[in-house]
Length: 124
Image (cartoon, rainbow, N blue to C red):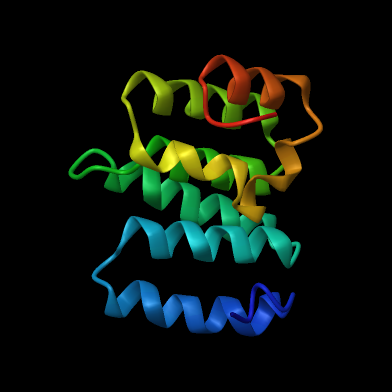
């Protein structure tokens, strides 16, 4: 809620608690990474991304989730690489790219339209 209200610093504090309480949920870690990125705390976002990547060695982390963190960091190439992997793995979260604001940084990239139309994720 705080992130949606663009209150990224307070959101990061609350999300850190959520990460702990959730037992290191990949979704909570990704949400914290995106909050750090939105608040201009690139180092914090990269730290959470590294945490997600380490976590993915032991349990499933959605490629779509990883793509969203890369998108929030402005790394479009990596974001699209993860979205392609999400498609290859049939990640059910991929359908969210059409509606989730976390993918807004990718929408003007021609690869986004191609992804949505070629992968039949909805009207472009």
